[in-house]
Length: 86
Image 1 (cartoon, rainbow, N blue to C red):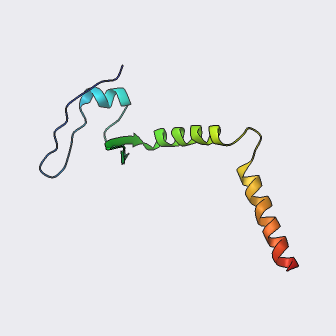
Image 2: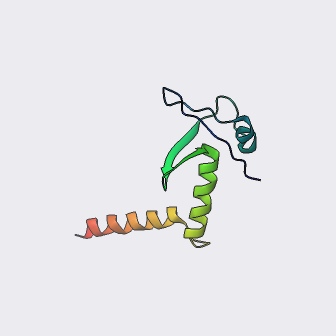
Image 3: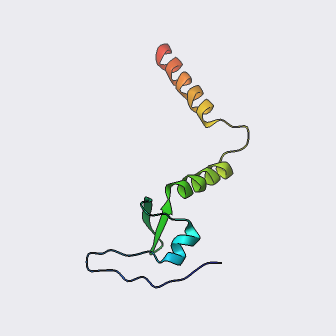
């Protein structure tokens, strides 16, 4: 269940994430979060969450059996061959 809370911005621009939201997100003291603005919203994500999200996006974008590293190596080899030939 998604929790909602009101957060006040302090005089130095600081905010405290309410305990119930920290618990739901499993945010521990000292953890580093990455902040970004997305569609006029402030989004805070852990590095692990970002990595999971990016892996899922790449999994959808790259067909199964395709190796991006393999394609890059083949591209580089073809480019080197063209340079040697010409």
